[in-house]
Length: 157
Image (cartoon, rainbow, N blue to C red; front, top):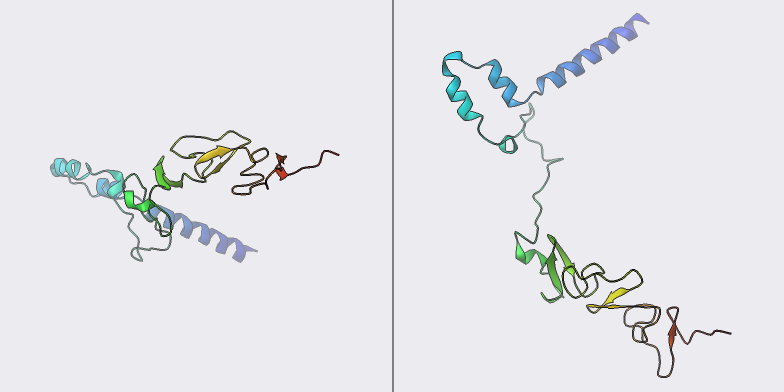
């Protein structure tokens, strides 16, 4: 039992040592700071914290590295895709959206459809009562039929 507790304590000490060695650069600089040359240390610390990269004993790892996101407000061509016109894909709230089918940006940025409506070709329509979009976009009822509850010629009997 004492061997098991010794191994456990050794593991805890090694884990704490690893955590302690992963300190930020600022703490290391203050440890090695020269009291006569304190103005030069202050000038070095004026960089934003985001520009400093963590130091690893094994070098830089790309496994969990975040890639810079391409947002359409910075890169307008990010919304262009093959097979669709640039009029269909717009940059709305830093996101590329297809304004022909997007319920929150139907036809234009910020134009929302009501709860019971869907966006078909850039227009908000009610699929439970619209003859041209009965039950879904482009589902037209035949001549003389009506649309009720999203079905053409729904029987009331």
